[in-house]
Length: 160
Length: 434
Image (cartoon, rainbow over all chains, first blue to last red; front, top):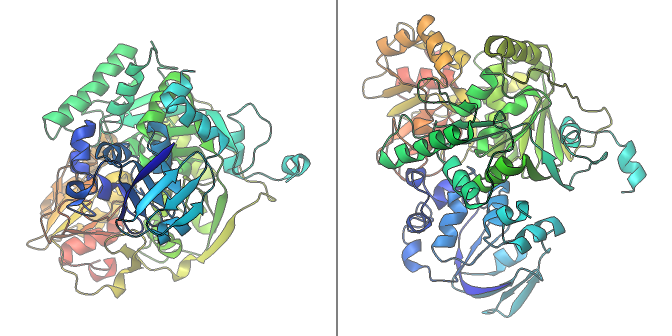
């Protein structure tokens, strides 16, 4: 799969309270969660983000709680893919399980700047910074995870 | 690495437990496995999504109604209508599927204090929970880790979960603790040392004479915060203290599953890294906003006036936590202008704190003694901070806006430091008031 969009930059240790504050966890409605996506990190993010845009962040993205509301909120506000230097582990599995594409690449995350046009090919593990005409290779997903993605998420995988 | 090498290599306690839950004979870090789980749990925040996912499938029943716990503990007693509806979903699902371990308000407790107390999670078990602090049970010598709601839904159906076998970092704590230093302080110190992603994807194995000398409550609070270093799990080898705790829990609550298995790391087990600490040099710690790794010795933090103190949570809401806070507060008053909120983690802890007179001490000091709930720890309810307010909390996270307004601040500390700070109205070392 290929995803193309403008980059929004975030720093290190963006935690799940930054992504979706706990006061909104009394709902599981993706649209409502999406309206508050990342408001503790950037109050105006939801106003600025456009469909297909890509989040580019530093180390340990998604650290903190296990709330699946976090990747749900990111997906619901229109973000197509998240690139980070590294991901926190529960966020990583939640994203895979619900079908939010995520890719880790320290090199790409450092090179890409705000509003750069970025293309991610998750199958081949290629990230292109089209604004700077730079290309980065990342490790493709391990075969086990590719199987989950191919099935369309964990629930379809376990009902095989 | 060749197959022969892998078979001959020693195993860590974590690898042994994972290996005992799969069909394969050998295991190594990096392997992807589907492992059988002994127990799983969800709460009023995470289980509603799991239930919805479960119901979207054609599954008719859960894999085992005795191995699932549904505990409405985050926004309960329900803080608003939406939360009430979510909690209701847990009740309805439990009724429909005859789930044996559903705990209503009045019998409920914070999940990570309640399950060990009831003897539902045991040494050698593999436990998953749709809550990041599920790593708490590692203190019992079991492998337990937080997962997401969809993982929980899949576990409801198949009784298994996928894992990447983690590498282990060994943490060795030598020496004797100074007065006023607790397991919480050791953990804050450790996270301060390695950082919030210092153990990313890895298992933290805590060992050494200082760990052996710790009571269970302190061990739980250490393993509880393994996630705050990015770890998949925290674990300690069971010893006499663990076994007597587990046997007492089984005797009292008579769970269905009573047998357990003790695993220990082999001498030649492989570790990704080894960290050693001399605990006699560690002072009571405090984590400054806005990361748990921003730790400093309390006596080096001067003149930080506070508005609120919270003593409770899955990290430090157990009876010995309330006991030390009560001892410090006995006969003293909470500083005028400061709110003290004490939240026992379970009904049993609540009762014991009443019997022992701790509840009275808190109330007489000018604090409140609440019903069990995660409450303010995650900024849910029962003590949300206003703009600019500062709070010393025995909880586990001090991220921006964690307990309320994005411009409020949370300082993480032990119950002793929290109680002393409540009396002084500023961050204080327990020796200042004791």
